[in-house]
Length: 88
Image (cartoon, rainbow, N blue to C red; front, side, top):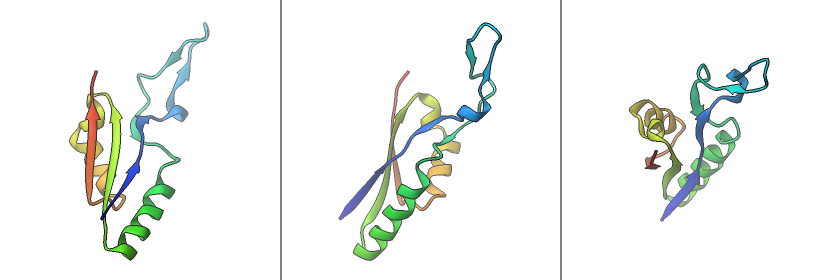
């Protein structure tokens, strides 16, 4: 059996800045796993362990979502495997 957990690799909105004219500057915001996703990883891991299943993380995004650092960050959350759909 396989259990799939979807997660988002995105820039941290807390690190974005707003210019005086109202535009949002994302250039200094570091990308990472969304702050809302860790509970899904935890529940998925518990269920996978109880059922003897493989836990797979699934995300879609730009090329940075497929970077080694992004994959390592997801695997460190307890996933067995990561599937990334990356496109400009």
